[in-house]
Length: 184
Image (tube, rainbow, N blue to C red; front, top):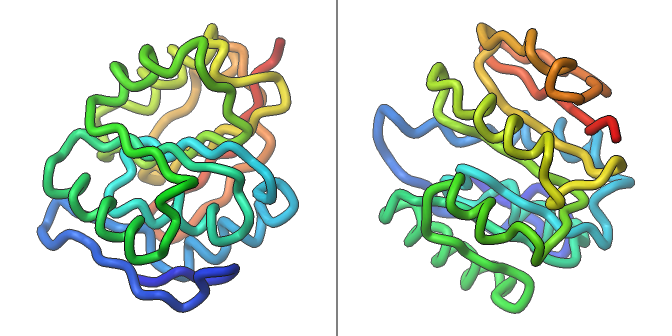
């Protein structure tokens, strides 16, 4: 796994090993950021369930103003810290070693995000929990982009009821990226 483009292009990133770990592949990350290329420069980026931090670090490499990484697993948070140091994005990075729900409440009223990316563990309905929170949150504006990486088996039939509009749905072999805006 590596940084695909930008100021830290080609730098290798550490990742965690194990059967429960499924880092976003370089190919999918490249596709994602090709779709985001005009939105990332100058953005305040939130990477939820950050894992190794590769998505937030890619955003920083491509010109995001700052990135917040939320990861409660100790080993993953340590991996993110190493990757932040290695890529030299320490000044623009904020690592929150806590549960996503607590992090969202902690950030409420203190930050507004241009892009929120989440890649929660599959089949646990955590994306619905986060989207339910964001539906009434000051963390996002109408023009904020929310991206959910999920299993291709995940149902998003509740999206409109929460007040979100689907901008795009990108399908891959076994997962999807859902691009959302909140209707205000």
